[in-house]
Image (spheres, rainbow, N blue to C red):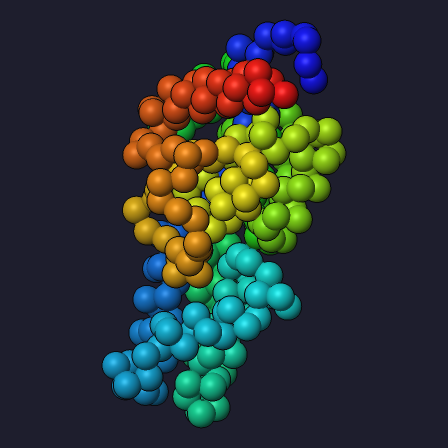
Length: 258
């Protein structure tokens, strides 16, 4: 484009996405508690230090992701499988029932919002359209969303089986929006940030106090120019404004050189 000056918009961000688990409400705490309970059961059959129980469970969960998916139901099935294998099939039916109860308790845990997150989401919702993109078991996620009291802030809610480039590309296609105008907020660099930034979008990383090992593995550079990091929900509105300013400046620079 030559011979014509086009003013850049005040903000080049037109849609802000939020993750659910460990971004809006606590989740990983309950999975860690489930792992401790699982170890206590298996530990009556094997030496935990020799068995490296949680590492074994992680391997089973990973190989089952494509079959069982993410969430407490998949975790429970993997726990049953791992318990049978770790104990050489010696685990009793009564203890397998205890493993099932661990999964049931995880599915029924209370939904506790991250402190300050509602005010932050409300502030951002007053300026930008929002979409909630969360992955896991459909029924469990729907239940948590309903219990959270945040559903009214999200005109669009997407519960997906995986958060990867293809998933975000599909969501953006449905919004008819280029990735450069999309900002994703979440605690997982692997699932929430990297797939968006990889398509030219923006990310705000808000780390949670604990992260599942699987989610901690990524190849995103810690100093990527389209990734901001905040420590608390109170910082999110200002961080979104900073991203919008950077995105607008990048758009303006691009137009000047077009």
